[in-house]
Amino acid sequence: MFRFGRKSPRTAKELDCREFGGGGMMTDIADGSFVNIAPEPATGMGICRLVAQLDGEKVTRLDANIGFSHRGIEKILERVNTAQAPVWCDKLSRNVPFSGGYAFVLAAEKLAKIEVPERAGQIRTLLSEIARVSALLTMTGNLARDTGNSTAGAIAAKACQRIDALLQAIVQTPFCTYFRVGGVAHDLADGFAQRTASWASDGILPVLDELKRLIDNGIFRSRTQGVGSIGLSEATAAGLTGDNARACGIKRDVRVDEPYDAYGAVKPDVPVQKAGDCYARFKSRIDGIYQSLDIINRLLPQFADGEINAFKRSETTTLTGLSAHFEAMVYGLPLPEGEVYAAVETPFGESGVYLVGDGSPIPYRCHFRSAGFPVMQVLPKIAVGADLLDVRTIVSSLGVVMTEVDR
Image (tube, rainbow, N blue to C red; front, side, top):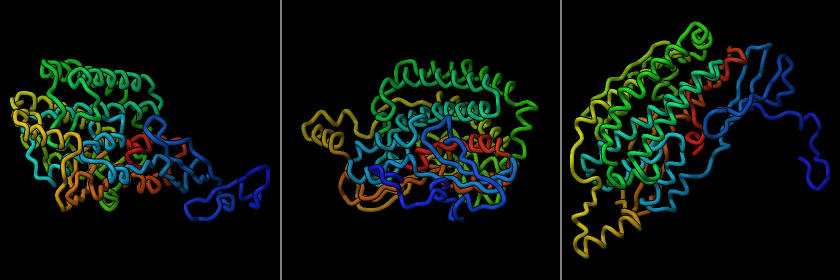
């Protein structure tokens, strides 16, 4: 480090190298070389620095340095009330609407023993599944692009833009403020059911067929099959969830095993793969898109009429009720003393919130169970033995978003 024109006492050799996973200075490695891989994931949110030790083109060691996207959100949530918190939670993954704050509002409702109206639960389920399709398409397109198929990546990106337009048309409000403790901010736009049904049948299915035809070919299989394999025992020990776990044969889905909101009524199937490699993760995400579309098609005919928030408008006709409603919306809902854990199935896996209340509207403690953090512990292991070219493919197939990992 140089400061005010004076040379650092560190030697030139030390300045040319970095610590490597506690294994000493990288330039001290006699047999082999090391290389800084471009910040990953290049197409996702946040940054992770990867440093690889090579023997020719083979990776013999990989160090994943995380924390570059840390913003202290858990500590921030100890300074804001329950009405403000969902906005901060949504910063965990801005490219996947509704995923960040969903677990928080469920935890707050569980701690405060709030019963959410049926229609509000159905709305939250519907929007989460639409956003899930968009996220899985993005991951699929990124994997296709990183294996040399830029056409499929562009098609997936275009489909995601249409999904974003659909969500904006039926929600008509910023996504980060829509999920609230007790329900949702307001009802969906008129005609949302017809628009969503049309998109789920005619808008997205042709795109999926085209993507499968473009991606699932011999070249793609040669780049993904047998690459970055994760065993069943390794996935279980690491705590992998979501599509990364289902690609290894783990039949675990929070929406089925611990249903919340309207998932108990639709009872989705849980497709699994066995190989645990990059190709299995690709297949698992394609299956996940069809699973989400099936949930949407089952849910739309079941939509109920009624309130969209536990704080009913009819309760605001009196001065006392109006004052209570005003305090809950402005100052937040008081959280009783106690602790709870609530989890949701996001496109990355199981995302959970451990919430502690002390009687005030401000959480005493809020800790996130990140779906991507266990993945980053597995990455250095499965990259060993792979070609340097395949590291990018492995990272892309895992679908990690660093802002969700670092928090």
